[in-house]
Image (cartoon, rainbow, N blue to C red; front, side, top):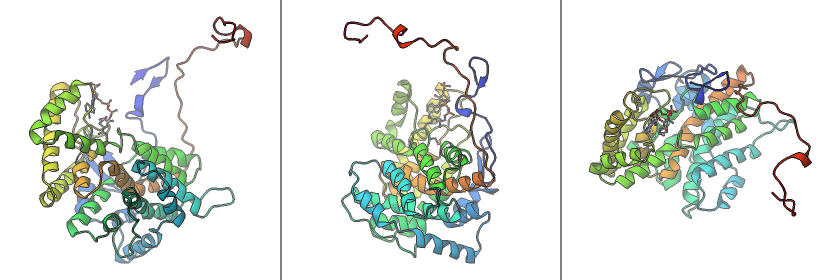
Length: 394
Ligand code: COA
């Protein structure tokens, strides 16, 4: 906490409770994450992304009939309007995938029903539309940027399997589709993280669900939030051998920089999601290339050791982004696409939070402590500023 000209200012809102939610709970001191009361350690190995989606949007885990109904609704919404595909073809091939995702999700609003006042209905159907279409956008850009034709979504595959199919044209093996499914489950929600808070602030003005989600994607992009895993992979690629990890860490910290994928505002333990991601990265590495997992493991060990020496008592451990990097890399994604995958999972949380906000809405509008000059009189323009030269410039 910092005191500025009187009022107490909580920089970064650390520890400030700004609202309530039924959706998820982060217990940072003990390293526990729950979705509507279910521990992530129970959900990750046992529940599919679609089951968790049902839990978050409709309040309970589905029975088989509900799951089948949900799948039909998702399948019917996967395909993109042709205008969106045409817009993606017109984008420079060098465009960053997150910029494309943010722009195209915003553009989806142009092709959905609109009310007389220009807003779109914010309801579970619109949420499902966004959840179903986001992976189609990411996969289409994965191909268009490589000069390939986008592949139409299938209506007989899970979200994870269909995404991998739309990237490669092949139905993925069980290990790959299950790993991506678990990844998506782990990323579904995380209480009032920065992007979710942005979504709720936007929704609180009564802007619609497309506006809220576009704000959220924009907020996710930075590397203090969802932009970190691509940078983790860049570190792993640069380190190139496990035995070089410690020297690399010392060098980064010596320059006063942070180790990406380490540290968390809420967790003072290892992020509970990291355990599942680490196991997946290891298993996927055994059938593709074990090198990336081994370097990641050495990097985590070295970072923990050096950070304990240099920043004792700060409790800086691996967060969700750390093992996301070798996991998604082993699944064939490029580092600059990792944050888009995060967005595909978190779309569930964002939309659920927006609907929760709207169900009991009040404008979110905090105060700021003013730190500018005191009130002083306005001078006529002729009496202001520096001495002028003959040209009237200072
Ligand atoms: N590497 C090195 N030092 C770190 C660190 C990291 N990854 N994360 C935190 N620290 C240190 C800070 O330097 C600071 O030390 P100081 O008090 O000596 O100045 C202290 O720990 C507190 O860090 P701060 O950035 O103020 O904490 P925060 O709660 O505002 O930030 C993160 C949390 C996640 C933004 C931060 O840990 C971070 O930048 N991590 C790397 C980026 C990342 O992985 N982002 C994804 C998050 S899921």
